[in-house]
Amino acid sequence: MNKVALITGATRGIGRQIAITLAKEGYDIALNYRKENEDLENTKKEIEENKVKCFAVKGDVSNFEDCEKIVKQVIENFGKIDVLVNNAGITKDMLLMRMKKEDFEQVIDINLVGTFNVTKNVINHMLKARTGRIINISSVVGVSGNAGQTNYSASKAGMIGFTKSLAKEVASRGVLVNAVAPGFIETTMTEVLKDEIKEEIAKGIPLKRMGTPQDVANVVKFLCSEDSSYMTGQVLQVDGGMLM
Image (cartoon, one colour):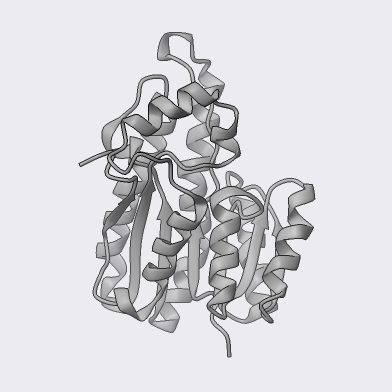
């Protein structure tokens, strides 16, 4: 019987690549999305090409009732959840003096409260099974901070604190909780940047390039594997050496 991975915000960017990478490892995939979009069917098709099952489940992670339904549907469909990847996230960048209250709250609600909402509904299943992996996709700005991103940095720093605390709570039951903190990754979020800005960013990275979604997915794959069975409460930076 295949292992089952639930990935939030999984139709594009890093989440999509994580889903495809785990499918290649033989995982059945529960693909969470918030809005209907053209990437959904393409992602589902690419996952199923690996001869595994893919179940697309709609829901807003910032809504607790939605998360109850998401997890219930995945359990009904697959019978279990072995891996949870909390990937859903948004940005609404602005200097604090110009930032609207709702822009701060929405980023916190989706990135941080969303992580709580999904994990809260999954954790009992993992504790009963006495096994499980929870991987939270944070960011290096959750460690270093970044001007214009007080909301995003706060949400991602919160995810790191959440990861470490939960890891201590559930380790004795065989559930491992870790975080991945990507640096600058080539996604739709960075596509909007001008080429000269991307070049400037790359100059500040020791490896002299931005990362790819696959770079992040490879680390998630490792954290799902038996190779990481003695690791919990860790934050793995995937940033080309940007933050040391």
